[in-house]
Image 1 (cartoon, rainbow, N blue to C red):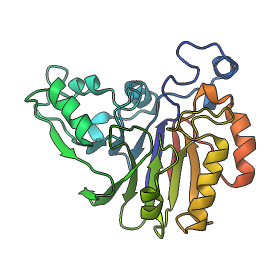
Image 2 (cartoon, rainbow, N blue to C red):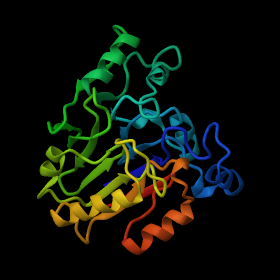
Image 3 (cartoon, one colour):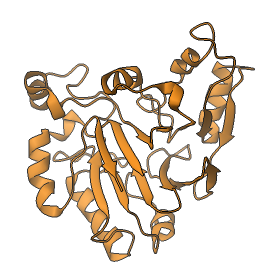
Image 4 (cartoon, rainbow, N blue to C red):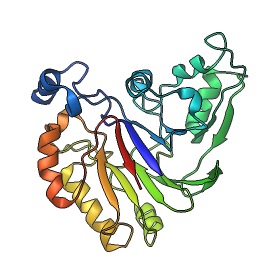
Length: 268
């Protein structure tokens, strides 16, 4: 199984949209891994996770085709993950498609938003619920509840191809006990976990910083979800976290954690 991190940034990216802070200015000067577009990922070239406003740029940068997607799976409705007006470009008159070439999986709120924006459009829509697995193209995908939005079933995604299992987890917050209990005893081959606030934690409950990332990782190790064979990687970094890519690597590398970047491929 191959996970490609298409975007490793948080809501306003790095360099940030309207910011001239230290991290943004460093990214403007140095480019490379310090430039982070809004978060999205691709599993085995055809299961697309989230639709950030930077999706077209990401596909152009990496030489990929949206027409290869078999599924588009949404995690939650924040704008940096759910740029649903972009869906119109999957259809005539922008191309010859009379039907979207991929199925859409999302929680009830997102489906209602799509249905309201695209009434009677030929979209294949499937509702997802936390802890209720569904099958797609030979994969078992299980949403798990995140602690991110109070009025929405915000989800992280566990994906199993029958041999390997990954958990893609942006916008997690500190998981509720029901999520910790669900993950107990389930082993992951790959964990991609957000580190939005890095070295500058805030009072907002819906994201992790570097220390809470390590606390979460330690708990996952203690309960058997992560072991020495699990690949662990960060994503969803904000300029407000006050950390360049190199600074994140210096912090995480001794702890056996990879720092995600745009275009990174992780094979398990």
